Image 1: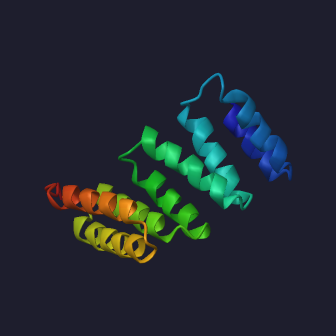
Image 2: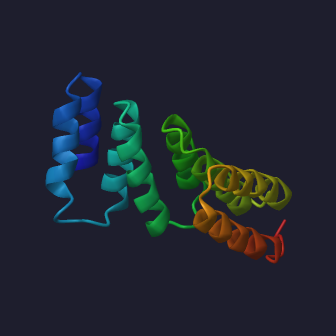
Length: 140
């Protein structure tokens, strides 16, 4: 597959060709999870943190309840100094793993960070999501 070919190119020291292979395939399958996941991993491996954040965000739209995707977004956001997003992503990962108390603590950190940076729109959105999390019964 194209994703495997891109990974092989990356492993053999051809990172730009690896990304090109994915980029060339995406117009034909713009929501292909394997292509998007591989692209996000390639961007992270190539220290393209801002692009990796965007790629992982796209994956959270396609797989909004997938903890691994949220965890990867948290890592990329932290590498890109997007602290509030990193906390929020970690909260989502914990939430979808059934660790609601820890998720709410991480979300509280995200809210504080957004407020401290003066991003009141993000702060309000995070508070709303925190409320939704708090009102969701734990399945565990």
